[in-house]
Image 1 (spheres, rainbow, N blue to C red):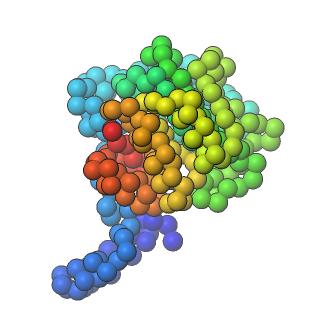
Image 2: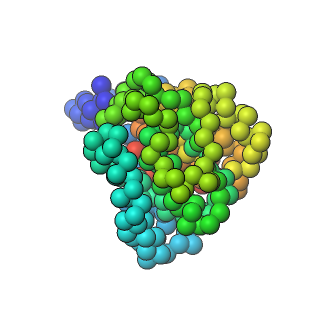
Length: 262
């Protein structure tokens, strides 16, 4: 049962109980569904100003429009998508925030897990290009077939034939791009040995509790002070909420994307 449907079912059942009975039920649960514990979803501008208090709403909005007005960037990606998948890109609601987060944090090193076609990679690289500094290090286990817990919930569940992960990234953005193919459990320790200090870590690979928690725990010590921990699909499990609670950190959310500063 999907997370939102399961949460709705639980809420309906609790509503029919007395306050005392509802409390007893909740207290006996091993954990609440993440959709009940997660903060309310914010807009891209509000999430940006939450994480970067020094940024004014007007500056955040100007950055958002900078991204949306980049017609050459969107045209290039849509042309590539039309050629391989016969459709335009379906952008997640948080893509604007991803661009803004990179622009305002001005990272030297961004590490991303889970690439697939490379739409998010392209957004990060476009922001790095505008910053005129920084590199993106990406890890991907190529989806030659459907990957349960990852691509099985996506509209397109495998890479197009004869395409490598990140095939969508425009050629003029690839100078700052380092792509490693394989399991992040094997590759992340090696990457952090070479780059012990990073500024943004973005999880978007296998969305099981074990794997998500592993990636957060592995990346956290290498995040610079004030660095960003970003994760897609934080409502799939309680991994993001539990990990940050253990670190004594709160987080913001835009739809299914969670974001916290170290």
